[in-house]
Length: 315
Image 1 (cartoon, one colour):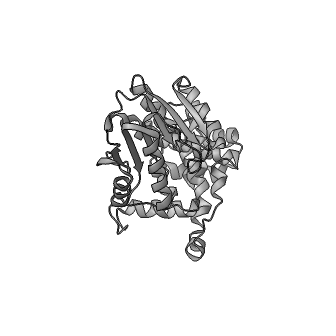
Image 2: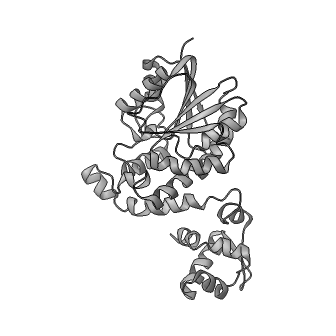
Image 3: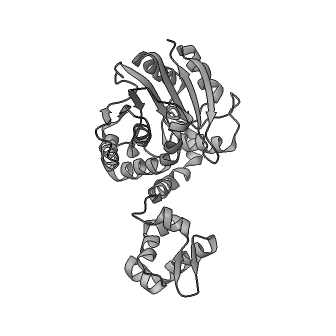
């Protein structure tokens, strides 16, 4: 919460601008001096800031990720984590009732501010994966990608920038896509990344795609819905089509490792109606049952917790 508070007050940006003393920061942030001093000293003890006893300075990492306007600014991710703070306070209620402790729709369009924080947080988190997705999977020669539940469109942006001739369609809820368009435009990709508003469970995918990406959304669905999405992807592509499922997975059907997947599954239960995490073995089996062949699992480089599960529609 100390880090959340410092970020919400934009303390790191203010220090970057030259407001480096407690008095200066309390004035420019319009907050109380002594509680702020405690927050600043905590950040020094944590290594987020340095101090000579009078003036505070950002570390290089803090400047890179927590100063507004920097290319790698990632504090929207902290805002989303802050929004999750009360959700985890409802863990006992989840265990008793099996129902999420927050309204899942609040971050998917119903609450504009929370949706914006969520989508930009997902964009910031996805930039790392997006930077290597096109290296982990070869999309060369493919022309049309369907990015199912693509949220901010980060992966579509990265893939069209890397792959000559590739265009992408991001399918997601209307309230989400309003923010997606901002991100796509800001990255200069409006001519190659389009949007398709709808619910991926009920909206027709169409046909003529030669690649489908299902990233970071299968964990929100039960087995039946996952199988449905795989079947819709299969039918939307021509022969030789490529499907890529990217997610946080359990290692196998026992669903007790790795430890991060346990925390992730609980987080999804707290924030979505059907969320959890699936096993790599399950997803591979469902893809094979759908008709995909050559199933291949590719863990992303640590510390990224995602695994890519790749399949092909037979020629």
